[in-house]
Length: 237
Length: 237
DNA sequence: ATGCAATATTTGTCTAGACGTCTATACATA
DNA sequence: TATGTATAGACGTCTAGACAAATATTGCAT
Image: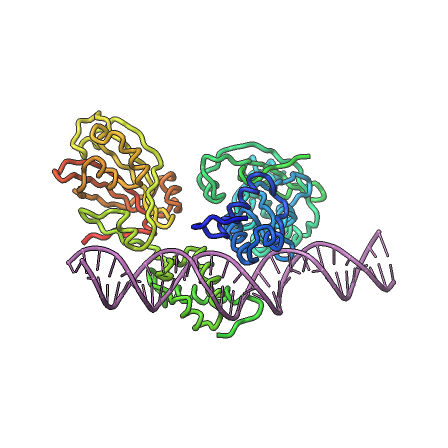
């Protein structure tokens, strides 16, 4: 490897690795060579390699995990739609850090649509949760969830604390629940959703409507979710 | 200085400097201590100090300039309104990197308002420029400018190349021009403007309408500008 | 085959030093 | 006065080495 003067070596290494990734030498999800391997390849000090990798981490091109190595960051998360798929499991299964932020919540009276999905009488009080799901700080989806207020009184505080609906349901004695139906379509986001997703208003989102039921088949949640189509791909098998 | 175990020293230094800044020990625009001074203060190696500073640069809290030092990033730019004040001069005078990005441009027929300000007959062709002004990559203002198309044919290309209206005017023989009037008010931004300014839609902007004239007093530009009120303060003296 | 403990691998942090690059300042010169 | 030069100060890059922390692998005992 020979270095062109005028540009720091770590920037040239960054450039080289970036073009390797662009060329598919390292595909998304792949493990990158270890620091020591890169040291041998480029013939520089380990710190110089680390400086280049830090730049790639900054731009979210790679992800580094202590003890495991560096991986090319998948820009698109495969989100399998199954009866038992849980957001946090999917994200942490990909070695990324899940987070679910509650934006707002309130108790409202169910309209005919919501009541229908939840098997309630229209006018019954339901809890509305508005939240953003993130992986490594990057927003992937914004969701509006409706839960029967009678059955889940006080669930908002538990959700805030655990940041997980699955966990919150457990506190209400529901150890097991499953997805009954998911409807999928594509729309343009409202400006509020676009800004929460940190994406342009003219980029489409995948919108889903879903119903979750408990072990007895009783609806416990109706939700609409807007997935960033640039960062998430839904998988049905 | 004593270090609590479990948290890396550079992170503790970052935290300390951050709270110094929050406490006003170092005010926005102030020069931070030099790396060597911080080395003596914290009793660590220079690289450790640099690691902490790099984190502060990443979060846009400080700005480092080779050969000069590190400075607390000013969140508010003072923008003096004068006959000869030029955006790029003001920004680079604060040791920040100015940039003016052309978003779109087209030739339209002047309506009564624009024609009136430019001393043209309604229906005359004018060039419309829509641009974003940035300092260190942070957007400060979005501007719509109208110029007589007849007098400034081809100015768009020059503006794209030089990123400066002042420079573009020079190519048309106008070495000197000045601000005739500036009207100032406050509004809420359109969603397009808010997104270009990378600020929330509910944060107000300072909107100005301005007329620039050449040395002979002939109008050469009518513009409306929306300044981010969180980052810019207009100064009239 | 399974589970656990020891070992190896890999990334993270800190120190030390050398030299390069950019800026500001003082000074000499024209 | 203006300009160029020398120098000092400050940040940028690169190398070298040691140890810590997290993870993966190996091998042993059951």
